[in-house]
Image (tube, rainbow, N blue to C red; front, side, top):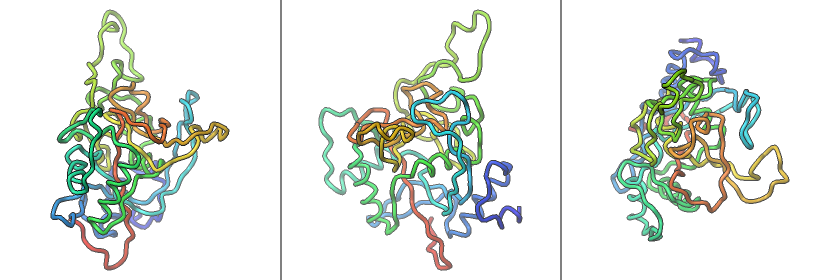
Length: 292
């Protein structure tokens, strides 16, 4: 365990689950935060619950021959600074707190989620406005995660298709897939669905967390990332203003929920399967304040 602490940017795929948890716990101690933690809002409320993600190096992208549109071939990426990331997508209740504080008005024609369901049908500008308000309320810097930061956090050291392995079951994620990816059944059972899809976004946190304590990194709703540019970075001639989403949703099959999967969305696109997750920047110093 001591050797793990001394590593500056360990290659996380070489670490055991115990070492990965120790890496996260050590990072939290060094950054002066508990695990998990949250910031207190100026109005007395609580900010989103966060998990500390430690610095490290990982392999980003899809190693398989079959790749969906725009997916990266494998490449090593170093995450040089620890950060906090939402354990859950921003919920309807959390966004409504901001809406009431800032006078945000919902267009009447939009379908809205409620309670602990992930907020959906929010524009890129609305998500950034919420993050700016959160930054002002807490005195910390909140933003969307980069694509690399999101995938690093989602994998939590795993090199498989999903943080749970190469297969994804209906007890692990809310996806629109009937058949469990990578598993087949012979005989009459092949005519039966493995599990019935929910056909909607459901409350956050109902499915198991990954090793670093993050829920719904596969399925439920797509997470927006900071990445903007051409739809396919490997074909820069494809023009248009896009951003990249990760994680899949209740609408798509489990295959689209892989850690390496990515879906470009039009910059102004709204959707009932599209939400976002916060990232909180952390710069550690000896007198870093202790978050709760």
